[in-house]
Length: 418
Image (cartoon, rainbow, N blue to C red; front, side, top):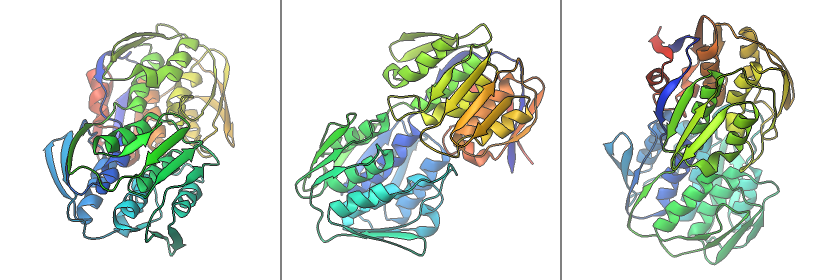
């Protein structure tokens, strides 16, 4: 068992280097299964979700060589099985194995995906897409099985812009016969990254990043390739918001400003300042933040994965703010923990009202999911006194060496085993 011990009250100052995107990595790793060959992936975040996915790939027969902690070589020439149920149930992104293995092997079976408990996260659009391509899908005894003699391209309309369904259908359609068109596709940067990765290997995917993606099926992918994962917009946004919450001054290195426009707009609205210079952002704030209203939306709107971190700023803002969560119905569990620290937040359903207070106070708090855990770290950094953050397994799913990064910019934070 581990916890983070944080002594608050220090403004963050310095430089932070952003790692590769976790959400891209956990889709690109299974996408490599579509290739019968060897590929190298670099700028890979060294987080627990990535490590678990590598364990699954090895059980599937993939030979993995780590060149260093951020670069991996995958040899996918000898796939030996199509599932490892007890592992795939542990995290959400395991469902990408369905699209990849269905495309590569014509059959896939995985356990129903787990991950952070953010409310209902159905995979009906994934199933709709697979069936439209010609697969038969069955859910029984906690497992999902998809099989097809042949996948054939078609037009698929998504009832809502689901990131997971967009990627999974794209994976399944890459080696399908003919052309697949995904209408009302999600536009998130990691969808573009998966498409770029596959195109590097010889796929023919067009329109990723727009609401219409066209996949011209190819017979096979190249037998070799090298790809670098896009920087993590959520890690970058977390440190940007930490600079504002702590009244600090941070330079965020290795980020893509375009991916962070909605976050920058809200930082400026609450009184922070942002200066961009190529792949660097400087974010600083020297006063109490102003109130603001937030509504999470699919990209390019404000990300649901930064909602909790923004909530820490609004908990301290001058005035009353409202967050409307349009993606997940159980994303306000962190507000109970902030209230332990002196916040005044009332949440109901998909909305929360933040009556700003002048200061937070240290407490024992428990992460309920990955991004809630990041928010509690921010709260501990700005609070008076000492904060203990528990359930670090959630945080480690998506942030690499998070306490070391915060410590490097002045936070008084340490990881303790107990």
